[in-house]
Length: 316
Ligand SMILES: NC(=O)C1=CN([C@@H]2O[C@H](COP(=O)(O)OP(=O)(O)OC[C@H]3O[C@@H](n4cnc5c(N)ncnc54)[C@H](OP(=O)(O)O)[C@@H]3O)[C@@H](O)[C@H]2O)C=CC1
Ligand SMILES: C[C@H]1O[C@H](OP(=O)(O)OP(=O)(O)OC[C@H]2O[C@@H](n3cnc4c(=O)[nH]c(N)nc43)[C@H](O)[C@@H]2O)[C@@H](O)[C@@H](O)C1=O
Image 1 (cartoon, rainbow, N blue to C red):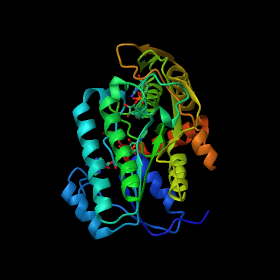
Image 2: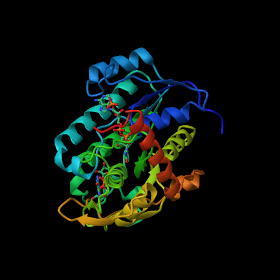
Image 3: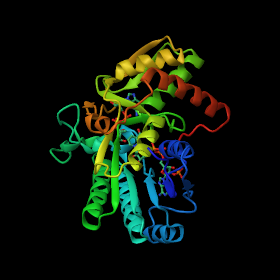
Image 4: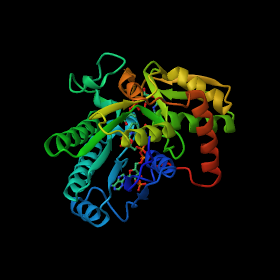
C-alpha cells in the first residue's frame, strides 16, 4: 500500500485520538495541518468555512468532539447533541464548500441500537431505539455519518466514517467524574494503592460488557481507511472481544498493583448492557488490531505515570 501524501487536516489534534492520528501520520509522506481551539472554534461555521478555504487540505480526519463517559453524557445531553451536531455539520459542509475531496468522520459504536444483536454489524444502524444515557451524543454522531454518506452519494466526494469501540491510551482524560471507565479506574486504583485504601468502588453493577481498543490501533485503522479507494460508508473499528466491567476492574487493579477489595456501586449508571463489534467488514479489507488489552493497559499506566510526573495529566 503506498504512503499517504498531500495535506491532511487533523481536527482535535490535542485529544487522545487526534494526537494518536498525528503520531501515525508522521510515518507517512503527508503534511499534517492542525489548529488549536483558540485558533479555530469548530462550533463557529463561518470561521470553519474560512479555515478550509484558506488551508485547502486534501483530506480531513475529524477527531474533534465533546467527549465524555456515561455520566457526563447522561448529565449534559444538550451540550453533547448541540456541540457535536454543530461541529460536525460545520466541518463537513465547510470542507465540501472548499473543495475537500476526502473526509474521514469519527463516530462511536454507541450509534447502534441498545438492544441490537451482538456482535454488532454495521447494518444494525437505525434498526431500534438508542441507549438513553448517550442518546444525545449518538444522535449527533448518526447525523455526522449520514451527512458524509449523503455527500458521497449526491456529489461523489469520498466522505466516509469509522465507528470505534471504547478507546484508551496515551493522552486520555482522567477526570474522576467526566471520563470513560478505563482512565477513571486507572486513576482510582492508583490513588487507592498510594493511600492504602482497603476498598475501591466502581460504578454500576459491574455486569455491563465493553470492548476496548488501544488508540494507536485506531490511528492505524484510520491510515488504512484513508488508503482505501472505495472504503465502506461507515465501518466498525474494534477488537471483537469484550469483557464485563468487573473483570476489567480486576485487570486494572492487577496492572496498577492494587491488592484491596473491589466493590460495585449500583447507584451509578450502568449504561448499555453490552456493546461488542462485529469486525468482519474491516477484517475482510485486511486490517486487524495489534495490541492486546493487557499490553495496552500496561502501556497506558506507564503513560499515566509519566503524564502525572510531568504535570501533563488531562482532567477536564
Ligand atoms: N474516547 C473514546 O473512548 C472514544 C472516542 N470516539 C470518538 O473519537 C473522537 C475523539 O475522541 P477523544 O480523542 O477520545 O476525545 P478528546 O476529548 O480526547 O479530544 C477531543 C478533541 O476535540 C477538541 N474539541 C472539542 N470541542 C472543540 C471545539 N469547539 N473546537 C475545536 N476543537 C474542539 C478538543 O480540543 P481541546 O484540546 O481544545 O479541548 C480535543 O482536542 C470523537 O469523535 C469521539 O466521539 C469514539 C469512540 C470511543
Ligand atoms: C465510548 C462510549 O462511552 C460512553 O459509554 P460507556 O461505554 O457506557 O462509557 P463509560 O466508559 O463511561 O462506562 C462504561 C461502563 O463502565 C462502568 N464504570 C465503572 N466504573 C466507572 C467509572 O469510574 N467511570 C466511568 N465512566 N464508568 C465506570 C459504567 O457504569 C459503564 O457500565 C458513551 O457515553 C459514549 O461516550 C461512547 O461512545
